[in-house]
Length: 383
Ligand code: NDP
Image 1: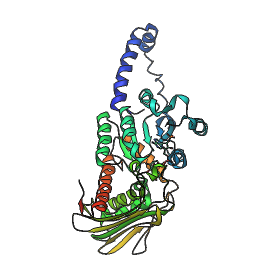
Image 2 (image 1 turned 180 degrees about the vertical axis):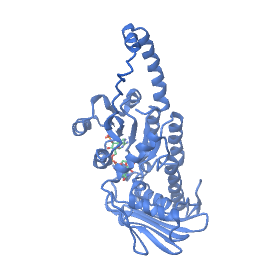
Image 3 (image 1 turned 120 degrees about the vertical axis):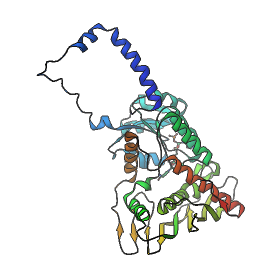
Image 4 (image 1 turned 90 degrees about the vertical axis):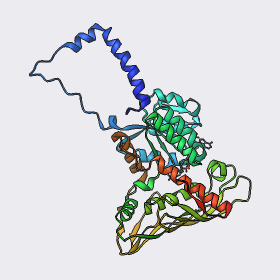
């Protein structure tokens, strides 16, 4: 377990007890006092095995993404290990424990998850639940002294995002958002083209992500507006974040937006379109849907263009440029790269690639898009 403020407090408590215990144990003191002959160097403690160095991850929420993508991806990481499970459905545990060899003492239900504070096998809690629940679970995870990984979209409002950031800062734990594209090598090459202004100053951008599914049902959280369902939160956050990494700019305003909503109480948006304006006047178009299929991030610049198409599937992300370059290479698993990058940021004490501030900035854009669609007016984006 890597030190966090909470674990350091526990460590100090435990070390004090341990030191007191040593003083009361003469045999141990005598043993420790023996000095080794100069020709017989004390054996160096064995280097920790690769497994010892891995950070223990507890998944919170054992739904579709955790089961289908994150747990399998954890098996491919170099720096992480799936060691814990936190769920509201304890009937799921036997299957998960059998498949991944998770010990009973590392399994928790939501109502007992505070107990994880005393479990040094767990370094990180990865929140993979409906969006409207992220704030509460992430704050509780931080309060338990664990580093927090939180799925996209970070939360429902910028204020909720700030609560998560504050809880993590208070506890001295890291916070990373599950923006897997930022760890994907094709996408990272596109980002570098923008950072280097390889094709000159940017002139416009478009970012489209949608799938041709059925409208989500009313009794599932993805079909409920107040749970974070709908195209804009679910898929649109990829387009908003895509424009952020594709341009390396923060938008100043939503010029206009439209939302096609389900015609029922609490019904979600099925398709949303929006136009962003940047401080230098550049415009970008965004479109997202759960009933229409498209998937591209396209950047126009003075001397050419470059794009990812498709921009965000789990596999097969492809990029190309106006002068015929192909971006790459493809990777077998984005999520394992994401978790290894985020684990190294914890180990090295560096900023994660997708910090909470980025998650919050994207939610500010999403809220401004909703406001613009509702009012029919241009909306400034709070920084
Ligand atoms: P699911 O509906 O498949 O699973 C969500 C799980 O959350 C449930 O199975 C349940 O697990 C837990 N949960 C906790 N509280 C609630 C609640 N109030 N209502 C319903 N479920 C609850 O969703 P996904 O796994 O597809 O999505 C979860 C999160 O992951 C979302 O934020 C989503 O945006 C994100 N996601 C990210 C993807 C990416 O590519 N980065 C892809 C897909 C999803 P349990 O029974 O164990 O308590």
